[in-house]
Image 1: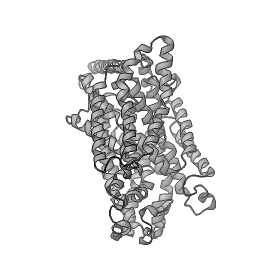
Image 2: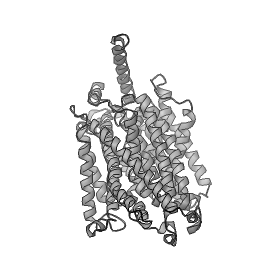
Image 3: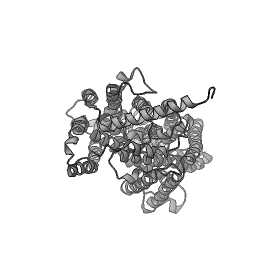
Image 4: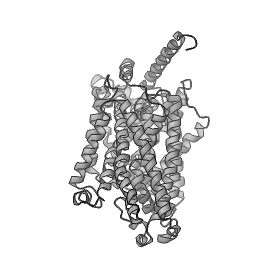
Length: 557
């Protein structure tokens, strides 16, 4: 099968990476990914869906993200390889489940890049210039808006073209700015106008019911925002000490972001003028929400700062995702599902340049199809959740298959955390509402012809098709899981877009039961496939080299 490349080839590609990123740089990468365009638009979009109860949605989102992230930190420390998130399903279940997980993850991440550019241009449309107002028509970018966003995509591309050290230094500086400005914004709005009466106006604390709070997690950009936790994992191949730095970077980035996002949500809720709530929270129509609130309360300096940061924050995130998605493409290639050119890493700079070019092209396609931040946020969020479900299954499957592998991060509570993470991920997928869940699951199927070419057509020509059966058997759980979740979404509660055959409350219990059933099926389906055997040998060889070098080191060194 195409999943059995030589170990030396993969080692060669990874030898070109520079292990130069420490805990601070990786935390900055995670936090910089989380604080992108989400903080500029998330507060308004969350309030539109859930009202003041949106505060709880950010907390729920952080709990979901942290629970799922814990499963991935163990995997990331086990396999400190670039593009880590697209590899784990391949190691535990072979080509079919591995490809579906990688495809979902890549779609979720690569589409963020044009989303960040769109956010910058959308904020720019609030400038008091005719040409700026012509960039956005209230729903999506115009032709000129797409052109400006395209320029930003090219900028992200070139910032990643030269060297990872340049990326790290630039990103750390940008992240400091990205943290300071949201904190300053929240504080300024709270001190300028804090009308607690807004909680009672427009329907009270939860005007659209508690189901809206759950949908808010999936649809308002909250999942999109917290998804940034995986950026440090995708740069694991460039971490100096992944066993120590990865879990710290992931946890710190989520928790710091949670505090910032809650502060921003509170500031937004209480700064909205009472007169603007006459049509409810969903009736707000700010193009640049926080900047316009600043202007409403005489904070002109804040508006100017936000207009500037509308470039800095999304651009910083766009650059990070341009970097991490290029490592993901290289990982997909080494899984055996892309041409060899996309696995090449420039020896001089340590950058996978062909992968950068591919992602730039795909980002242009997404920008042409999805021209509004809101529409991109919905698609990204649901695709992200689909990519999440591999982690809980893979981490426990690999504990069963390879109990003696080195695990720098190993939580005793993982047998409990993993199934809970599977339940959380499945619930968020259901909260994404029909027909969006069905559409994104269909997008997952769109990638299957690529898998079929590498795993069916080419092996068939070589007479190796019989080797496919174990991969199909091990990946069947994921295919059927997606079909069952689509059916449950269609038949589920009306508050989540379904036909209403499942009563409120019972539908959530059904989703949880389905999640547990497929979790245990998935863990039992894990097998010692060629990719796992290969990576075990590779990591064992690397460990032998490290130990030999340690023995040669002079005493007291």
